[in-house]
Each structure stands twice: as structure tokens, then as C-alpha cells.
Length: 77
Image: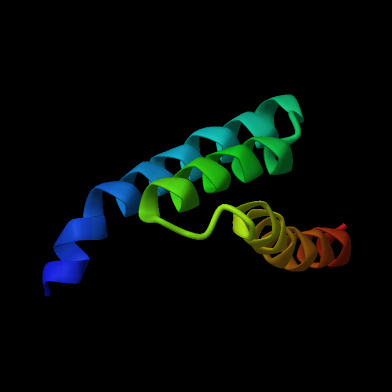
């Protein structure tokens, strides 16, 4: 339970960042992936991930979200 309480501010900040830039990407067409990668790099560094893998994990996480989202978008069009 202590672990959940420790990371709650980080989870809340990532959720707010995702909603904020998701709306911006939907309305303005900005590159949300680039912004999300920067947010993930910052968040993972704060959490304590090894600095050698932070960038790789952030880009991989972003791709793990972008690929299914792109597939669903293409299918709906």
C-alpha cells in the first residue's frame, strides 16, 4: 500500500499530461508522441530508472500506444 501512495502524484501528473496533450493533438494536430516521450523521460527519471534505458523505455511505451491507436483510427476511417 505504501508503494501506491508513493507513486500516486506521478500517476496523477502523467494522467493530466496525457489528457492535456491528447486534447491538443485532437484539436490542433500537434505531435503528441514527441511531447509524451519527453514527459515519460522526465517521469521515469524521477522514479529512478537507469539513465541508460530511460529513453528506450519512453520511446517503446509511446510506440506501444501509438500503433494500436493508429490501427483503430485507420479502421474507423
